[in-house]
Image (cartoon, rainbow, N blue to C red; front, side, top):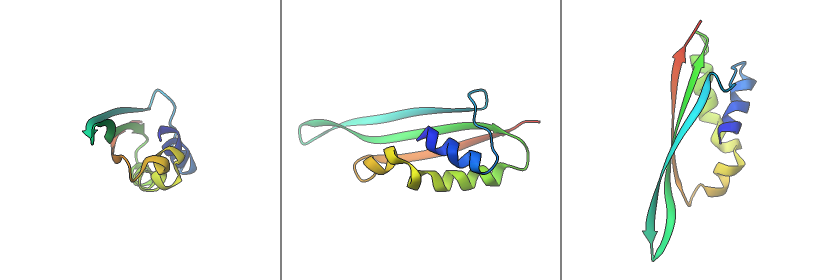
Length: 90
């Protein structure tokens, strides 16, 4: 998922190397009919970018899940919640 978002960011001229881009992922595992299953993922993306690129980053965030093979594989089985945290730098 992180890689697919990076591709969407790159399409918009936004860098996503490790010094400016990271993700923190948490999840919930629940007993579903006697089977432990991952039921929810919360993905917080952190991105430092140049001023004026905020709207482009938000657009990328809206687009990436539909292009992500991993997300498309589990959507419907796992509730995915994501959030983009932006910080502008010079």
